[in-house]
Image 1 (spheres, rainbow, N blue to C red):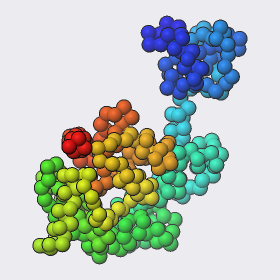
Image 2: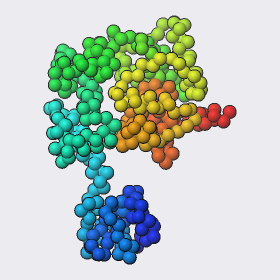
Image 3: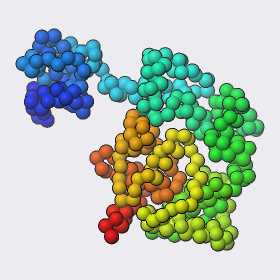
Image 4: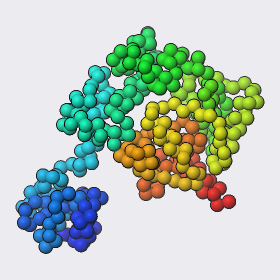
Length: 353
């Protein structure tokens, strides 16, 4: 094989290992069957003397070989095919018309059982949970513009009002009526202060600390807060609240210090699972998105885990900054990549002292 990247011996070792990472780098053909395959193909291995390697599908076809029907090397990578099936199902779940599991499975040419397993492996949640999360997100948008709560519930895609009210608190973190008033009946207090990462906003509800936001200016912090809690009020001079804010800032400055304040975490069941796992990562350590997904028992939900990290509203308290790419490189951070690098460097230094 004329391939500057891999020798024939290296290709053969990849075939023996059925290495999926080698897929796309070359294909191998079997002289006795006139079939070519991906390196990861699970078909019975041929003898080495009957195997030839080609740099791509076109080269194997030109040499007179036909594609394997099991691994389908001439088609999109199987993992990509699976992702495309899930993406198509997500689009169906986000339409106005209710759709059943059987209808979803039929739309992507799978059995309901295997489709349900695939969807959960990729997204980290069931199709039903995905649909509920989408409806909750749409409900937040429609409540502000609908004349009645029932109109908003129906416009968000709930089949009827009773199906919404069964899950009202988990969908919005409060009742629809309270949310429509901007959470006025579920008061949130906040204060603005300084920290070494810039300006910091700490917000608290009756349940506990509900937001720790970072920015360079107060205007930017208030803009973030208005999207989360439109009717949040700036705290008066309250020594007890001030003491709690000081404990939050102390933990921001020294993440390995104890933190015992109650938290008001609001999100989907999957997000809450990810956030709880994040809180188990010790200061000074880093984990990959893949490792985090595996730790919650959902190794295929890497993208969903990354999305949950991005939805975190409690900077440092829920340490999503400790999650990095598989290679160790830094990835995105809700409050800026520079802050993420600063936090990781600080924690590393604190562990050495």
